[in-house]
View: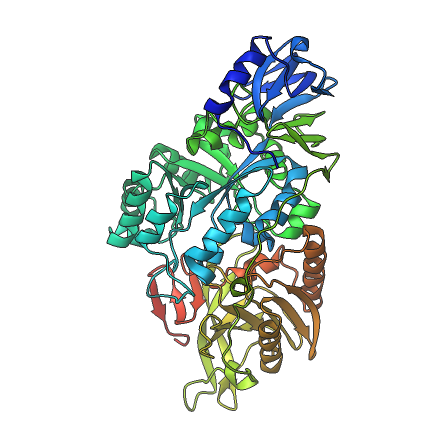
Length: 597
């Protein structure tokens, strides 16, 4: 892959091409120039590209065509900037950065701002460096945010590694680090925790962007304190009031459409109906699994959805190009088709539905008609990254037994209530029967068991509880080593023997996902890298994930994107109730709570 020159290095050539004194490397002829700076479409324009950057855009640049110039005929199609994802986690795609890039490039994504806090919880700073290094090899722009919160809620969970302010300061010197990843420990910021403020200070001292994550409906004093603490954006809004509150406090409102998060429609009315200035609104995905990437798209999917929600196409386009670049201090580097910027272009025949027909990144055709045209190089992942599931023992049904108070015939248990298509859960209660001294799940009430199995240090420790919302029936279990954010192992099931078999299987295959029914495994998705990712092609991982979804349905689950809901059951920074290796967590109070009332 040809090394991209910086703007100062490329400037003499760019000026010569723009002045007509030198030929361009590529000229795109006669298309509709979509200008996100002026928010207008200009017909009949050429684009000249040199050194991987835009040199000139004008009605006639035939003077820039030399014997070696690659000429692409736009044929009246729209020429728009490559799309930018402002906040995302590559690990959620179950893919390494190389395979993630290979999956999204044909959809027109040419820039990603990624927070690898999933691998940080498993492998610490070294895992972040591995992600950063593979990202740097790709033919598109992948900027890395240094994870801020591992653990995400100190005292409420135990991670494989911890991130320190010293780690953050070191990472800020790496070339591909663009800022600090989402500051999930919002109570820490609100209470002026010295460690959290030190991480923010290290980022601001490096003149880089602090990512936010305020997962509370309270928009009063706590939110004002959080904004004062320094986070520059937030993607946890779920309603119009959330979006408005963020931009009024000088933050960017990031509105997400992921595989399981549908938060654009409820917030974009701040622009489409309330008429707020759209420059401070940004579109992102947050979490997309491989099936969504292969079958539905990436940022092109988010853009189309925003348009379908009533947003003007040019405004929606700004929200996933220029607004994003400006937020990260890269407006002079990418996000628009203007001189000096990286030459990232999509050719499309329709602006609203956005069929992605040709994708150019850094002046190179990288995809055409949905087919990848370049290689996405892999990092040589070491054995330490592939051997991360340590159970410490063979688990049995007894590890998943939930003892009731002595002499009880029934118990009132706290239950994690899954909310379809949203990250928050509900704190529910259920009266459950006791048999042989053990509290029992209840299929009629849609209450299954949930267990968190420690997998970083081989302690053999299992925390048990109850969950509702999946609709599971019969004897089944589903387990995953993807368990945001501490990434222990989550097993949900209706039968303790099945839960033990599922957990042991995950240990044997080094991590991933496994679904069991009636004593047999129905589907498996091996994720050997940190128990989070596969370095197989996205289509292969998506095919395995599709079988996993089918297997969940065979077990009675009808939730949209239930796997994503499953993987978030240990996310102890989003209300209302979660599970961790330390016990059941009341996230409205940020404290451990008892299972039985």
